[in-house]
Length: 254
Image 1 (cartoon, rainbow, N blue to C red):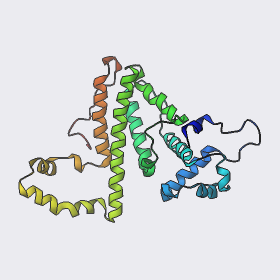
Image 2: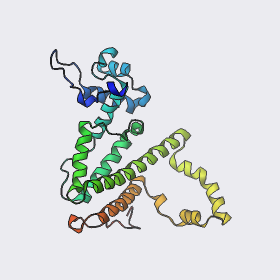
Image 3: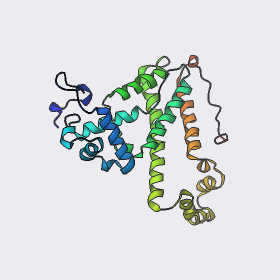
């Protein structure tokens, strides 16, 4: 579709000003697409499959969602609506951002195919706008809007980068047909060879001394999140409150 013809789906009324009430809603269509993707992967999500699930004709759905790009916009926004931001900002910025971070990670893990529909460029759907208002509202009283954008970008980059790695690792393990512990056991001879060589002292220290790789995924995420929040705390005025993390090195997973 040429730019001159493009109209953001959120600018199109869901219900026509005249005529009969639509039989289906965008929410129903997006929910059906998500169920299909969860069950069979994103490649299974077609207008024909969605139509069959909700009992509609495939061509009739194009009256509601004119293109696949529009469908992806609806799906992405509905997924963002799964992140609970009720009560934000609460006045405790650290608690709010911790809650948001765990909610965003949980949503990605429930729908690992989201990496294929996650949009770097916003389309400003209602749920995305709610997240902007609530989550960025947490720091709005303490920093400029530009600093707020930078701090949120840092937080989101940590969350999404970490969860993408989780999803990728889980997929590799799944394809191998091994459990994660079996996967690691298969790598042990090579690790032992490298340690015994004496040529890689930092790698050896990681293998022999580091606790981080032995933590659960949840504990690894919590530990890294606390470090990111400490960085955010350093950028805030002292009047922002919320004491620095007590979750220091050596306490992760305790």
